[in-house]
Amino acid sequence: MKDGFVRAAVGTPAIRVADCPGNARNIIALMREAEEKHVKLLTLPELCVTGYTASDLLLTRPLLEGALSALEEICKASETLDVLTSVGVPLAFGGRLYNCAAFVKGGRVLGAVPKRCLPNYGVYYELRHFTPGPAWVRPVELLGQTVPFGGELLLRCRQMPELTIGAEICEDLWVPDSPGVKLAVAGATVICNNSASDESVGKADYRRMLVTSQSARLICAYLYADAGEGESSTDLVFSGQNLIAENGALLAQSRRYTTGLVCAEIDVQFLDHERRRMNTFGTPDETPFTVEFDLQMEDTALTRFIDPMPFVPSDPAERAARCEEILDIQAHGLATRLKHIHCGKALVAVSGGLDSTLALLVTARAFDLCGMGRENIVAITMPCFGTTARTRSNAQIISERLGTEFREIPIGAAVNRHFADIGVSPDARDTTYENCQARERTQVLMDLANKLGGIAVGTGDLSELALGWATYNGDHMSMYAVNASVPKTLVRYLVQYEADRSGDAELSAALNDILATPVSPELLPPEEGEISQKTEDLVGPYELHDFFLYHILRRGCTAEKTRRLALRAFDGRYDEKTITRWLQTFCRRFFSQQFKRSCMPDGPKVGSVALSPRGDLRMPSDAVGALWQVKG
Image (cartoon, rainbow, N blue to C red; front, top):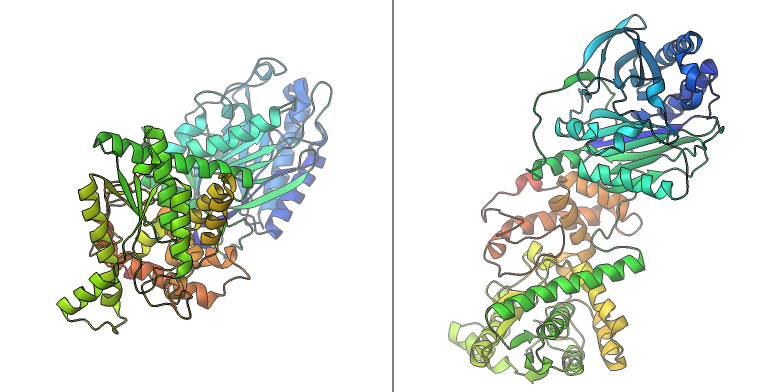
């Protein structure tokens, strides 16, 4: 349960209709299996103690008494298990019968939640047997205990208050105003659904969509346990489609027509963070009745998939669609700016590197959207001390193949004059040596934009902004920054996407060569004609920094939790020492370089992580980052 991870499971036991003792044995077997797998929260199907399809037998005393005896056996079995189990059972109170989820742990029923929305259409006729459950919670006598009973009941873990649980039962999920809405607003980060949903063509996809969308809308984990083997097939077939979703992501699902457990770790810290971030999530009208329970705190081994490239879809078709959408957002943002300021010219400083290449590709798209000729785009290369023939050549090829005006303005003489003016040795090879070149390029770009009546388009990306890997008032500055919210790992795939679809062999070859070129600012002289200054040797691998950026900024993870996730995501690629080193670098630079982001230019937001001081990140430039540092 460290770092907010809780192992949860949904299960389908093999049952026989009306065989309560046999069903109890199978339920207990799943509970024990869950314990062996370190599961802390287990959800089982609707009326699994009796069978959902028991029909009019549910009204008979023998079956109801058998169900109570079975529930008592389940309670006894739970005495030695550190698992909170939600089991579907019919319960009678005050001359009424209710379809319930009983939460069992430590030899007791901690609470019973009745089904609120009883379907009585099509193949369903639950009103024939059950009474809709009340929302308000009242005490009832059950198995010699006083148990809270009602729909608006929450169960909260004392050791981890972020783990707060509510319940829906089958149809409760399918209605317009589901009970889970109020439960989530009141604090439930997990919704358990004991269900018995029959199969028909296409229903499985719809059910999966419903569960994932409910988890997204309620910012919760949703545990959906479905009835399966053993239910009567008189008119219906049940497949046991079990699902675990978290905030719109499907973490685990069973193969249909099988029994057993499906497990996943849910991240209740993340859910809690996400709700704090969204101030429109709502506040409860009243505090629901809450039962507290205990769990033994232990490290939860992670089995869930941790994506090492959280910004890049792994599926090629999805990735291509994502690239097209991002390029459209970037281009439309720039097109809107050009139209607003009545500007018919754009200037891009092209270096033959990834970022400037993407900026030029986006600018070409924007001019197409505006109906303006690409010859009005001025692509400028400004070679200096570190420029190689390879990058200079690629810059010219892509500029010309895209139909833009290409200009070359060497800046070596101007930089050397500037060195003389400020008393810097041309042999210094220090930060001043590097930054003078970057600022000279920006001065040329800005002043030429003034002369031509154009706009200087920025090239820096999100990852560079996060690290502050930009020269203040050098490549840090522009008149519109089209790449400002595109992480470096995604820049690569956007350029690859354009290379694959260009239809121009020479342009594609140049783009592919740019993709194969080491990332470099090219501010130090080359060695034997090759790039000598490689960015990732200096600040660390961008795939790690983008991973850190996503989990710390988007998911609200601590540095320690981020390291743990990175160790799993990059297992076999980076060891703990390497991950720790670059995570320390990321956290240190992220805080120390905020002053650059505080005055960054406008640029279009394309994803869920952005660093604009006018949008996603309002952060003081002098904040202390000690609490975000990982221990070595």
